Image 1 (cartoon, helix red, strand yellow):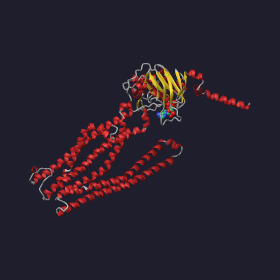
Image 2: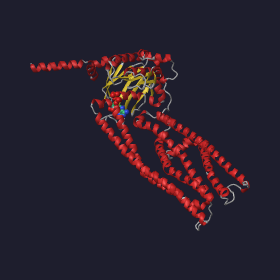
Image 3: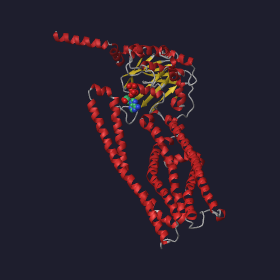
Length: 623
Ligand code: ADP
């Protein structure tokens, strides 16, 4: 399957099921184009037989028996066929384009939703690796696929224009049609030639617009820094420079474009003059030697009208349509690799569900490394042979200096990453052998920077369970010590938060996130304390919250402030990915190791001790 080209893959998986609409729409559009050829043909015939009376009234493909013999009847037929052709053309084109476009939109909708479903199913590691690229694939490239399908429609439209006009020409006078075949060839070559010259200039314009926008954005977003360092003039100069480069690039493209527009206009005029010259000579000399057919004034008129259908569509096909299809193809090369991931496999959700009753957790000699691109300067793994046990209902505190691997340790419990070796068990069951979804139903997670979606407090807390009632939400908020501050918000639980709503403090966001995690009543709660400074009051609040929450479930809390986990049943000290100390707060202080050192620093005991030492040293020197 992976060998098929991206475009074939899209057609096969998404467009094929709408094959009837795509084909039906195409047929109707081609029919409309054929009908569009009728008026020029009928007018040519009317000119010859009714006005000049130079030949009998006949229509190609129509049996003579059907044609009235009197002039009035023939005139009526002319008018009637014009009306029917124009009406029929409009109807066919309207309906044909409508069903084609509908199939087009539905296909894009299917591709977009499938791509999003796969993207969200991908493991977190894939998201971290792809970062903004994934968003641009989902957003820009999926939109850009429209070029592919719309380009296909335009190809049918303009190709049909060209083909039907040429077919009618062949039918009327194949000699002259062969001569006129030169015209689209010249037009196509000229158009491609200029497109080749214009493309790099347009690329330069786009690149310059990008640079200009980036400059403007940086200057405005960083306005405080700009102002505080008095760099307004410097920024104005830089924006002026970028704008000047954009102007130069745009001018260069514009000049060439103007030349190309004139050239193609002259080509069109020359085409018609050429046809008129050849045709007049033909009529006057009554079939010159090289030709075998005779030409009438009416047929020449029809040819002149068709000539426009040989030129404009060719120009569009040679440049616009080709470019759109190419750009759509480029996007398909980025979207299809994502779509080829089977969502079910990507979700990695095979294996039976976990059956969690108590919430006991064991880490058994877990080693993990982020691998290449790891920020670790040494060759050590991020986590090495970490073993720890949390009995059901335990409150486990995880401490250590920044970068020691604390967050990584708890993320492994949610399978955001998978251990390289070793095993994590939940109530005795290896989590790697069970469904990820069932695991995450039992393990609540509050990350360092909890995300609040634009919406109300209620919606944010109820995010995990859309059927949650207001009393469920209030209950969870109370358990997370969030109820008090929510009640004081302008609209209580209906206050808008997130992007455009009330801005909440870090501690408030965290408590809402805890409420959200508690709503699902998980047996285990993982809390990763924010590094950003929360005030002492908030910290005390969260400390109390965690203690309450820990009363009826297992809690893992990563803490930067040791006071947060002072009450923990067990504390694990990590250093460079290894467990170096473990015990209760009292035991660790007693051991007088690195925990005791950290505790001394954080409680200010060390500062005092440092003073004492200096004093002592001074005394010594003086003494
Ligand atoms: P802590 O929570 O103790 O501050 P982390 O678990 O966040 O430590 O990080 C441990 C180490 O792993 C650090 O060296 C960090 O730079 C690295 N690290 C963390 N996350 C990633 C990641 N997504 N990719 C690569 N390296 C990472």
